[in-house]
Image (tube, rainbow, N blue to C red; front, side):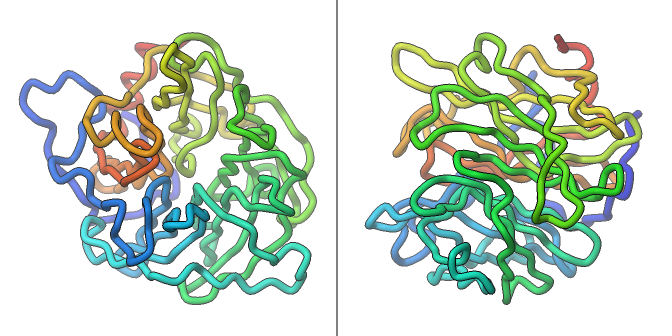
Length: 327
């Protein structure tokens, strides 16, 4: 059985038992979508968002595209991880450098706890070009924005929850200024969250559901066998892009080395709220919370770039599926 390293107890983690007859390694909440597109007053859609346990409850950073279709980030709070209150106003990041702090757009956040700080990474607009923004908070009231991690163009910046080889670590997906029709996952390190280097290729797009491009998903989960990483992959069909999810296990000390990687997807668009929306045929995980006491995992994911869904699996179940169905 896999064991969590530095895992935390989350006794109020949302959970629903696997339905009878379900053959999938991941199963959906019967309450989906748990966050609808109009959960705040001026939103066109709310999706691709990040959630963490916080002081016995839950906090989140949510992507909202408003009715002008501008993308911004908002704080949310919940006692049970299912019923959410999300602020109407976007996060007013505090930044000492006006050049970096000027807000153009922000989307697809992840939140990662490292020591006593919660770091937010997101696709940040720098002169209307996408790169990786970084900020931190200790209370989800004030957010302090740091330097952008990389030059444009880049997306899907995901921090590891502790330093590796004495440095902060991140995976990302270098891209372009459009709806990127390519992309692989790379690993980078930084001594101070300002200067990034030691770039290494982690995984490339391969075939089928992950044949067009791939990108990081939730914060990696540290196990005794390596870093369990959920990621997204994209297929180009005659109907456009289809976004699915897979899993990989990365080496603990050299995370650019892939130990296992699922050949089949672990989740694909199937329900109407995943198939129909502003961008059809999308499941896009940004959060995976694992309870150390039970091994249960709650996965929050964007559906059809419109709403947020919740799904479940277990650490042992996902690890077993990955090992049995690996490249």
